[in-house]
Image (cartoon, rainbow, N blue to C red; front, side, top):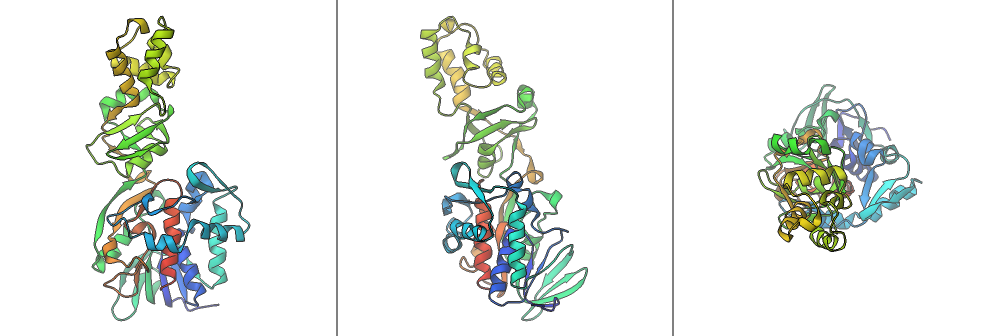
Length: 396
């Protein structure tokens, strides 16, 4: 199929996961589809994801794995395109994969396989993908949309915005999709970096500077939300899966609570050690619970040291609480530079949950990360991309 590129049925802005999935579904329906992207290569975020192996979905996907001003908005799309549906697609392309912890699915070989799959599916239904396209603006002067680019004007019956959010700007990410939404009168929930490392202020950094690279099995909480996964000290603050997860919930100026020895009652362990090994030094015992560098820092910070026999319950409790219930107020995040996704986006109140179409602008659709639907770490954001792209592709 060869369609004229300056008069399309469906014009999709963004050749990422959501945009390509939408293109495939629209192409299957015989629609003339053109995809525009400013990058020189398609789906760059897929390429770098999952350490280069793409955590392409999560078996345990439910609406509870997503944040939005309207937590129910994602339900319809997720029900109609499930993780198993995407698994069937990659199986059909002979891509082998494996499951890691917590239902996370990865390619055995390379994330490029997912990109190749999407491009092959697009090619099979005549989708035209135009890269290195600088988009100047979008308008709807009549019944059709007009998109101006450096290469000229393209007109289309439907316009799908799949440009993502501003996370990882070095890959060309921006808030362009929000600009399009505002231009057409839609509300945008103020975006912020999510799934992002947290940073410390100078005082805490002075204490933790020598801990960079130390990792522990942790549980991190903010309010009633808790995540039990790995934690990593960095030269800026804290990272690791548990921290990235809680960053989507954390509010500026508030404390998070960290258990640095998940599954271990440190106070109980110290009391038993005092009975059984009274002459042991506290630091030696702590180094058997958490990494030695961290144990040394905790001894230093709490000013509790010496033989266990000489330490009261009160002093042991102070040390134990510093490990099991460490309360710390981050001074911020590393921002969009390292954020995996963006929280906030196009307000779902203005969109159809079934089709992703703007209620007030017929033919205008928003899908993927640009929408105010943000998944947890672990393949959920890709599943939202597949599901929202599929939903729009069935309607455009």
